[in-house]
Length: 151
Image (cartoon, rainbow, N blue to C red; front, side, top):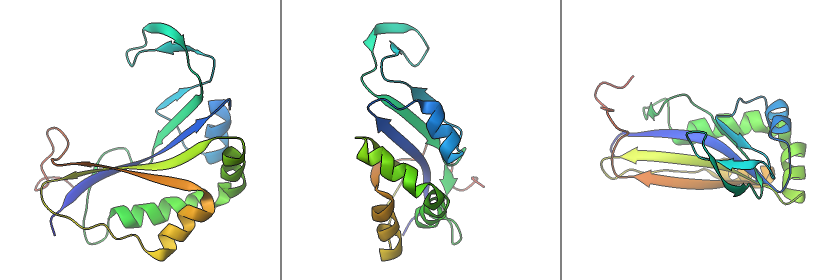
């Protein structure tokens, strides 16, 4: 199987939660947030028509795309992330009860066939924590990235 690069982020949508509460509870710094009812903005910060219907929080769990290796894989990073999120189980449960959704978003950048194995342990932890997984598979590497030179 071929090498691939990947990124993982945590995304939370909720009818009304204050994004700051998510940051304080989880201990992750977000890259994007907005609160339900706030005026909508473009990615460049320009005002748009209307207001956000729900709160949103997105935090990258890795700063840059990582190259898969014998020691680093989507599976290993998922397990490590789930171990960290276990301490926030009650909070994630409450989010779900209140109508929120939490998901681990995995972007995979591939050139060739690859295999992704999720063990019963990983799937069980995802279920117990109430986390969805979204896989986004791109048939190329991130712009300008070269797997031969990635560290």
